[in-house]
Image (cartoon, rainbow, N blue to C red):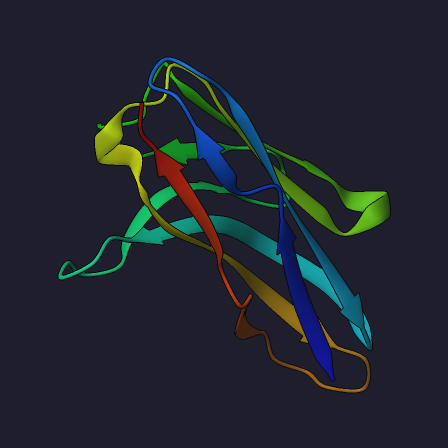
Length: 121
């Protein structure tokens, strides 16, 4: 089995910063892309940022210049540095990974359980 566990969420004032982490563990052969999604109450889940195995990144327009995604392949971990946070960034943030399990040929998507980020004064 494969597990993705997020950490680092919390309550922060507007203009503040948070760093989210997501560690993948289990019977992992390799990890392709990893990403962060978020879902606010009453809204659809949306892509925030993604990073592929080569380190190329992609960001939602709403977070460009404020958020930075990175990964540590040795630790099977992806990070999301969030700066200049706004109230509209409030959401549950989910980690996602395209992962190949040991002994399996294809890649599958796995999700973390989510971590709450609240931006409020």
